[in-house]
Length: 317
Image (cartoon, rainbow, N blue to C red; front, side, top):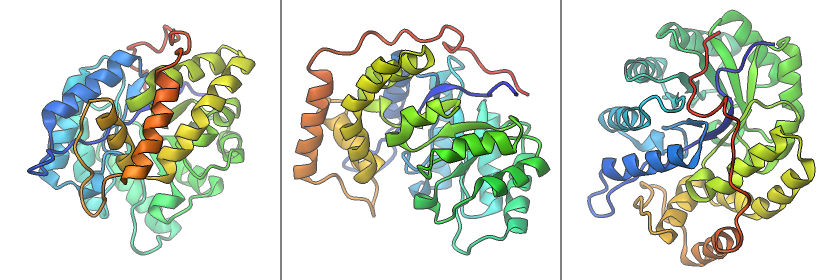
């Protein structure tokens, strides 16, 4: 089996906006990114759906990419979401991310028309050829409207040498094992569905891509520490505590929920960008109560992570 290019907790920052002007708040982004690294995240992944990348202009996207990667400054690996409606736009973003030192690229098939297998192969192939970075295919049927089954993903990966990773967000845990087996261990598989995090790790996921560390980093890191250490009872206990929060942020939309939580924690990141609206008052109060339960009481033991993950850049395959 190949060595995973990324592993562990891969944290997604939101993109902060100025509450009055609506412009990207780069100082707040630097602070949030630095917080994620300092908390012990094993990698940082800007500009996914959590980062509202679909609502950014090219100039804003470039600024968020550069600011995040410069703030991380090689302390941990970085995974940049470069998805765009067009192949040309995705290629442009891939090259910008590579120029600023990204470790790897993530590509979600944003489509209006349902793409054929030949169109998917051409799209991913052209993006892959734009840089020499390893690439992660992101399957999120709920966001993209396209469900790439394991057989389709493996067929694409066989045609595209640097497509070495898959982020699977369908919530079907069986797919983690299927992707690994069908690819003969050549694909590293990552979980993007928060509520199934523990089952995904137990099914062989190399990492968990999540925005949860923006608000509850110690709990997320301790869950990973427990599961990789084989402490099953401890991992189950942590997930029981985390599950209501994880379900809440997914159900209410990550940009809305995470930004509301940051406001509660006096770490403002501004509102989400229209057409998204801020989390309503009643739901914000529910989130406040969850965060109080998780963080005001006894915290889990300190997230002592695997030293091999701390600050190390993965070797390329």
